[in-house]
Length: 391
Image (cartoon, rainbow, N blue to C red; front, side, top):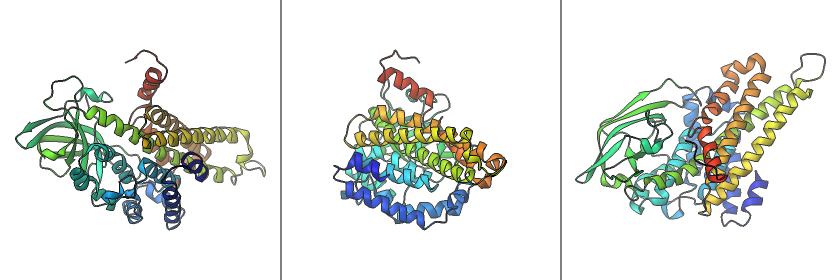
């Protein structure tokens, strides 16, 4: 990790901060037992809370928040770096990941008062976020959403539905994408919704991925939001949303690549000891070595693209190409790696307590969410290669 940070960010004013962050995360990891990730991935709720609390206690949620608001600064890179390193040890928390990228549009487009009210409490863990974007009838086509917020006096009245909302029951705020009374084509607005507001109803879905993580459908029935729930200008939410989605894809890539590293490390250790025929370990067979080596190369290539994209993002440049490609490459490489991990562990790979099945479920889900890889390919073809729109 240090070679990547040194090569890409040696000239950054935050270089010393990044070095300190890596030392902090390494110390945090040492405080947990080596098999901690297995307990977390199989759904130990208390252990999940302990890990998240350790992140807060170390001040790591202050990364990306300006020092004027009590944060540590460091841009998006700090969050990506922490997610990558924790995920490599199976200790990344989805709660921290969600809050990290959900507050990006708020930090970039919110007023000082909104940042103080909604974002600052997330540094200490007093408040957490979820993202309210996907709808049953719109899916990936966010511009086709039906959820609407109508201005009435000094309030916004919200009606509609969102689905596949991760950690909705544990979140204090939702980063909400909705239509308003504006009639312009593609006009979307973004809000911060208090998830405990009257009229918000949750329905848990039967989906299992990462540890204790749960998915919900969320319904809004005449939910009243204060005037300051609107972030930035009404109707400009599409622009804010896409800027936030680049951050989302880079942080999710870090989560995914860390899991790929973890699955690879555990699998290499297993096949280097496992013997079946004769005295040679399974890991000495090219049929085992070559696919693992391929995954290693693809993971490291995706990681370089992710950090290059993060660098552009923090410099205020267009990181869309790198963010999308990193998400595509990382999810594919990690899912392949976790599938191999199950295969090379044999029957043990299907044992929930071994942890590989949980890693596979999560990386498989990330090929679909937060954006499916087919839409990423559409983006690359159209925006990076100049091909006609295909959908």
